[in-house]
Structure formats: structure tokens, C-alpha cells
Image (cartoon, rainbow, N blue to C red; front, side, top):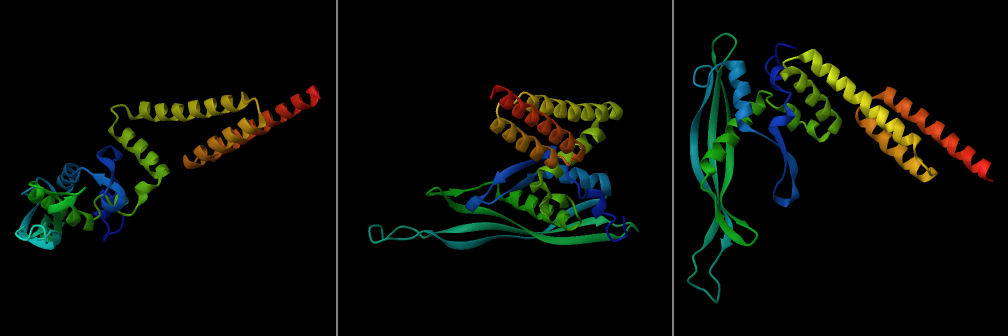
Length: 247
């Protein structure tokens, strides 16, 4: 841990249990995180909110966008309805290592009046959402949940690894949890080898081998890959011998 990344290094890893996948406008996909989790992590690091850290709203406004509905020839008296976005400028503060007040500023945005599936809608929770967005962006600058914003949650192997780490961290009996995870991996390998050994055709055998090798690679288990490969070769030789004997 370097002096410059002393905060980042403590808060960059995110517990997968407090995240969820989402699909946004235009098909954009990502990982969302519970805001309360970020606030809890900030409280762990800086102290109670309002004492060791907090925020101030510097700006609070509505920005108008493109028309969603305009007067037409058939309805010349129709009101012009435009999209509106709620915007807040947030200043997050926290107590530095020498007791000084440190600040970060960011903007939070939320659609207030918008078009969805042909309907013009109004979101009355915009103020809360914009504030949450602004606070989250300020914390992001300090490294909170950096693994999400760096795209590491797109890698299933990374998610599996930290999921196991957090389970160990939260377990009352850490040694028992470590043993449980180890046994789970051993049971998976035993099941894979057994299934490969029961393949009845060359095509089924090849399909199973590809499936289990891919999964072992994703799990980053080189020893498992070697064992699965050996099971594949043994079953392949057995099937070929059976074919020769039948001929």
C-alpha cells in the first residue's frame, strides 16, 4: 500500500452480495451497487456520517432537454412538453489523516420528465436519486468500489474469487469455511471426472471435455485441467478399444 493510494487500497474491492446486474437505456449493461453499502464503507473508514465525513449540496436545479411532445396541426393548442433532468452539485467532505477537512465535488443527475415506451413519465424520487448519484461519484474518486468501475466484475473468475474471500471474511468459523470451499472444489472435480468416464460416444466425450476444461480454466485451476485431460484421454482410449473389439 503506497501513501497516495492508502484510501483506495482499503475500499477498492466490492462484496458481490451488494451488487446486481442491470440493463439501462439503449441496452447498456453494467453492475449496480447498493448506496448504503458505500456509506457503510465510508463510515468504517472515516467515522460516523456528520462527524468524520458528510456532504453539502452546492447546486440544485432542473435542466430542460429536447421536446417530448409539441403542438401539431391536429392539436395546435397542445402544450410543449420537454424532457427535464434533475441535477445537483455535491461536495463530499471527510477528515484527513492529519485532522484536516478534505473535499471532493461531483454532479449527480436523474431524469425527472422523460419518455419511456411511448409514455411521458415523471419520477418524483429524482432528488433522492440525484443526491445518491453525486455522493457515489465523489466516493468513486477515492477508490470506493473501483473494481466495478474498472470492469473487473465483467470477469466471472474475479467475481468467484472475491465471493469466496468475502465468505471467509464474514464466516464465524473461518477455518471451517476454507475447508468447505476446498471440499466444494474437490467434489466438482470428482463429478467432472466421473461424468467424463461415463461418456458413451466420442462426440459426447469431446463435448464434456470442452465444457469441463472451460470451467476449470475459468476457475483458474491448472491441476484440475490436467486431471480432466487425463480422464478424457483414458475414456477416449477405452472407447476406441471397444470399437476395435466390436469390429
